[in-house]
Image (cartoon, rainbow over the protein chains, first blue to last red):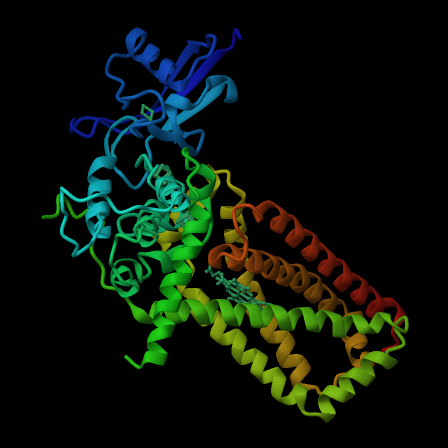
Length: 247
Length: 220
Ligand code: HEM
Ligand code: SF4
Ligand code: SF4
Ligand code: FES
């Protein structure tokens, strides 16, 4: 303990026409068990009330506090300052629309992604409220749950080299993972070709370069590498099949 | 009822699935060839640079027309691989800037590996073409002819650049193809990366030994 932390923080207010993007320096005494959540709040309370950043749950659940911490995207609320060097550079995540300083709008992006992926169970079965629910194998249920743990923080998109090159088009690992979540769900009746409609292009799975920035930064440790490979195989082979079925 | 078209809806392209297969299959075919090639060249070491084994192998491949057909075929596969893989290269200035600033700020091994793979690709394209042209237009292949080239200073430098470039591209390529298609899983990624590194280093070492033999032990 006893370190003085030096913060370099990106400043820009998108609402204020007079605002110019720049970096501001701050100093702060490090305290026991300090997280970036605590540090940023202290800076706002004690040094600059105009500092903008997002938090909700401060427990790594809501996904709103993701930012670039010394170049890597991560959740500020679960990043301990003792794991960082004394000089800490904070930037807003790229790709997403900047609101101000460290605050970005991930909500609009994710809403659009979910609509594009049609992120709901597609079935013709009528729901019968009186009937007993269909049973599901426990291992399968756990597999689906595992893929449903995404908190839509956006780290995987901010960590993606392809998304950096194609910022407003590339779908990102979170979308690919979301699709595989419905693929493995037997209740969803969509066929491979319907999924191909959504991800079968350069903006989708075939644009992914396999850099695994997503896999290596996802704060919830979702199995992105294995899902992306599964999606690539399923989508690739679904088109080979057309050659033999002749349509 | 779209809230906001942040990610535009883009039509699927069936050809992209095909090209993805062509890219990985041509890549793997080239890797298989490069490993074979490495072994054949290394036969110069078997009789300590005497060249009898290498000449025998070279004569066999030429007598059966495998060199005359296989050589241009490999060149064609390389061309196809280049054209298909070049789709992924950041050729626009905006993309170049984006990938450089991303790689520089995001300290991440696999991202850098891709940058190396894309960079080595260009060097291989140029130097590899020169190498193939030279060898295939001066058939038959003999140990003495190769030694003559390598003992000239320019060609030695040429091969000292081409060798590590190819092995880097091949090593990273096999690893990334495995990761992309799922042959390498999350659980096996670390071990695979370590194995790939060792394999690439071994290949470079064998190549260097062969170059040394050509340079010092073989009569031009
Ligand atoms: C002619 C010069 C070459 C160029 C320009 C080139 C270019 C590329 C590029 C840009 C990639 C990355 C594609 C991606 O990120 O998806 C790549 C992948 C690859 N290359 Fe090459 N390459 C060349 C020659 C070779 C050679 C000679 C070999 C083998 C000996 C090879 C083996 C591979 C492999 C295995 C991959 C991974 C395939 C994949 O990711 O789908 N390449 N190449
Ligand atoms: S593996 Fe694909 S989605 Fe993940 S960071 Fe790399 S290019 Fe992006
Ligand atoms: S996949 Fe991981 S990194 Fe990406 S949005 Fe979901 S929780 Fe965040
Ligand atoms: S504040 Fe909710 S994840 Fe960090």
